[in-house]
Image 1 (spheres, rainbow over the protein chains, first blue to last red):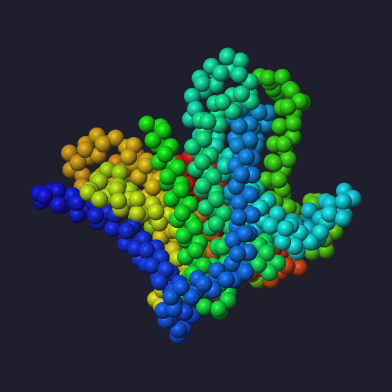
Image 2 (cartoon, each protein chain N blue to C red; image 1 turned 45 degrees about the vertical axis):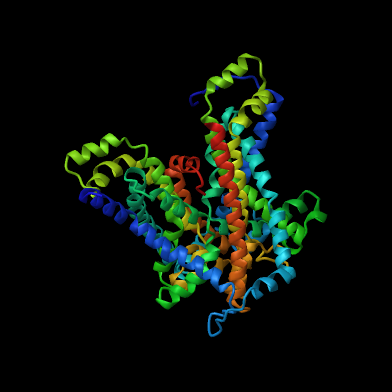
Length: 295
Length: 283
């Protein structure tokens, strides 16, 4: 390596150094620390001994852990719903249905509002004296005006509604972006050949934006594991009991609310990490397969 | 009489079109309703709220907002949020542009591996890293300072920033960089004279997203900022909402104040947001 080459390399390394150092100190180090501490009885104060897999055994034996996992899986329902609604919305915007301009400027609004504010609004809307029950009572369906957040099935329903509602705009923008990359002449040709709206949708539109739908699906599933915390915090606080606790909320609960031991909290965090990494791997495999198809 | 505008429809009105239009209207109403609800109720008294929460207020009474400032001191929390967001944007742009320029235009043996490793950390949930970070920050006395939050936001935001910027910088013609070298530009010269002027749109996209993400984030500041006067507006609000559960109008005033800056951002930078979502993985 010549002197100039070495100098070029040194400058390049200096360019990426800030990013790499920050990530090493504040991402990689904590990651290693969490994994190590999940095998200890760390309590943040005095105890810090290696205890093997005892934290994991205790976790897998606990009912609340399995309940939490089940909650996460139930909440997946939000993913197909938001994709479907987002798809319909973007298709209608693409076809320039009546009123599309007005709608286009509105549907991304929920994404702008903080998740925790959306959560509090949903909590207020679905509270016993809130607007939802007011409307139900007004329309004579007062038997349906229940304590929505008081029982597990309805509380999960409220959370899922919030998740779908906030993400319609994101899905819509993503799908519409994919649709606009399709050559309009393809549709024109199909239209001339006599293909109706449904035929065009199922035979051209959906196959051509399939990759984006796949991407959105995996991303949204991963998001359901890691991004639900503010909603749970503000809408239900995990309750009733563990009825709406999700895995990301459980990490917070164990680490920063209970004093049952940080080692235990780290074990929950590692489980969350393993699940999200697996999903990321799936995502990579999917996109690589798609790349092969493309070429 | 004003001017009469005739709308010429390209297609006839079919029942299907009307049904879709109604569905649009319902969805639009659901998107606007929270803003309407926050707005009208923040001007009411508690008594009026419980009597009619849907109607416009009888009089626009600003006392909830006045109390929010004079007693809750929300302006301090707004400033905290602003300081954290702006500092994060500034730092992430500097760090991101430097690294993305190297990855896009000056690859070296192994740079692709480093790039992939950086992207991989993007998917690491913040909940996982916050436990050790909390103890790290408390050891170096950064708890209850904005710096701990800024560092955390930097660390979690750098990967997507680098991904976005690198993809865009790759599209900048090499000839421009070479011309700059011939003109005697060094590393920083190329960045200042070529990369930043050419990359302005993507830097704006990134800044918009970082602003929204940091302004709206809840978990990180919730854990790192425990004293009211150091908290961001979202964290301070969450305490307010649980403390004043019997006074919804007061809560609404707070929620509205915290939402307005983000909505203003949206109105100005809507175009950048759409581009950012389509560039991938930004939320």
